[in-house]
Length: 222
Image (cartoon, rainbow, N blue to C red; front, side):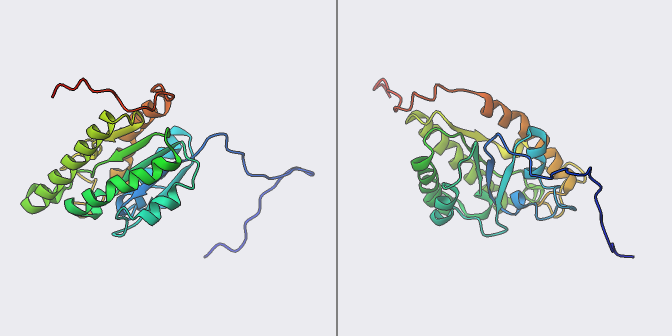
């Protein structure tokens, strides 16, 4: 029998209001994995789980097959006053497209949020890549570029840019954590959240001399 009525009892004169948030939200941008495409229930995706564990509001901009680092989306995200941006769309683009879009995407965020932590998140390990050599090489190329971009940006003085290796969040071959060798189950999303939260917590509480935004000085010795 479907639900016919729902009532909530409150004291006379009571007022029901939303709890005011005292923290800025964490903004996630990415793929169907961020979206929670194969989670069994609403709220079982890793973005929602991270929010509950950290006690932060989270805004989920995961686009199944369509999060590809578009500058228009970056400009929209830049309108949000966020505690942190987590950018992880590499799985939706080939290495060439990633190289073409990531610098501009981060630059747009930095124009509005020069000191806000930005996390670059590489793809989780795909079980399919254990026997699909082409997929594995693509995964390696994308991950290598993200690390290269991260190192170069840090050398240029972006102290609030961070890199998290997605392959450490959900290693391949763990029973019951992936639906199709790529997309996590609810159990997989929970494992991602548990592994991601300590790293995000460290970034949120770390104060990297935020006033020091000038490029790092290099010695000139190569």
